Image (cartoon, rainbow, N blue to C red; front, top):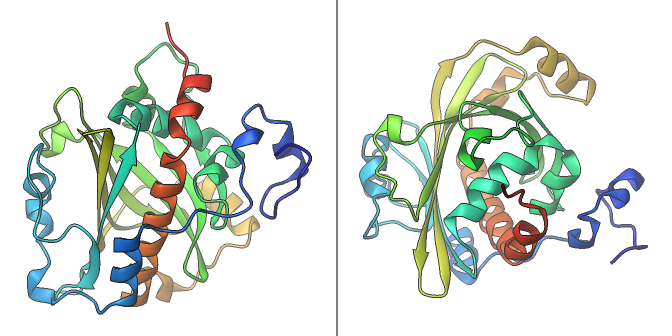
Length: 273
């Protein structure tokens, strides 16, 4: 509600045309996520291999694990979250990923309790291109709380079809390489499949972490992250089971929260030819 000041938002955020969608807190996660969070981690032997993620997130069917967290015997962390989204479509999520990261206030709409900062390598929000082209091949730099600790990340979005995903026209897959925005180290992968179901859509999210690699650093972003109070402890690059559990809850909250008003946000702010 306009005139109310919620923690996490700056005074300038309230001048934005989407301020009416700001909330004091993130909506609770759906019950299946809360049950998985409160329960034990998955048996390592039950965790699907990353090599099978394109089949796991195929256009039809379900995986043996739709919501849960755990650690494989090789140290790879795994998180899966399924979110039901009434009234939502895959196209709305393609628009969102091309629109939100250009302003921190937009990013905070998604998870007002945890999201702190966002910017894009290249602002394509007003370019005369499709919504997918605005984020695929782009990098989003974000600061967000996952559990008690701020994570400062650079997420490079890839073309899912180029990595073997089958993506029908009424579905989407948001696929990204997750890395540190401070160190030139990749940490893992994320994938969010959105496909239609009766009354709306479902999102099936997957995270595979501790799958490290190297990337060319963006020195400007790294310097700005340090100025915002970045942690440069090398131990932060070794992710533990507690982070996987916290990420399960974080994903369950943010996807459920945004889905509740994404149709209205999209109708009001999506730019059409």
